[in-house]
Image 1 (cartoon, rainbow, N blue to C red):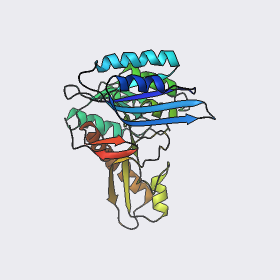
Image 2: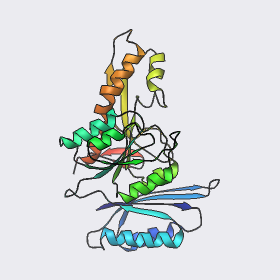
Image 3: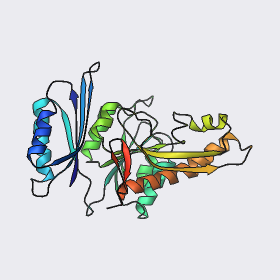
Amino acid sequence: MQVIITAVGPDNRGLADPIVHHVSTSGANISEIQMYDHDAERIFAMLLRIEWPGDSPSVDELREKMNEIGQQTGLSIRTWSRPQPSRKPRLAICTTYRPEPALAVLRAIRDGRIKADPVVMLGNRSAVQGVAEQFDVDWQMVGDGKGNPDNDRMVEIFDEYDVDYIVLARYMRILPASTCWRFAGGRIINLHHGLLPPFPGFRPYQDAFEHRMLTYGATIHFIVPELDAGNQTIHQATFTVTPGTPLQEIIRIGESDHEPTCLVEGLRRVVDREVELHFHRVVATGGS
């Protein structure tokens, strides 16, 4: 069984040693290890991807041991394994203003096209709260009056709801690196409303329009803690307009129709285990 262990906390010596020692002496095979040590910020972060042998203690027991190590070292440690086929993945859907992406995901789940459970929706604005209520999904407001998110509270919510995947459905705030590390390894999925890599940032429609492009698109990608640049593409799709199409019409097509469809397909690929993130690269797995 594949297990991902992440650890984040104040920098110090020997933080990785007890984690690596325990999993290796328990017979696990370490298939990926990444460590981040930022001297200026005094932050330590680690990702460990292992194959946990079936004859070893259960993943729950491994999680208890990792929590014990976390208490001893001052690290925030999470032990996660993808749900077995008998349990649907639990989703947290993060939103800001646009309701269409979240609505498309919830409809796809309702219709059986995405086999997952939407256990909570979060917003740094309240614009999409009605969509959560329409589908009877718990709503959590995490933004202040100016839309500034409480990032610590978001992490608490993800843990409280035992979330498997975090879906940034046009969530228009950048997650801090510490949050990305806590849920690293292909657990955070982002909808970018433009084609990557040529059109990053918050104005991809406008940027493409200024370059006199006739082809526009959206990109679904895994979030990577250090980069968060969208190079880890899960799915990308385009639409073409005729010369002279006004920018506002292009944006309308993209926001209303294209982005939601693209997100549904990208999320389906992750939930159906067609793709995973290994060493910052998306790899095809062939499904479960």
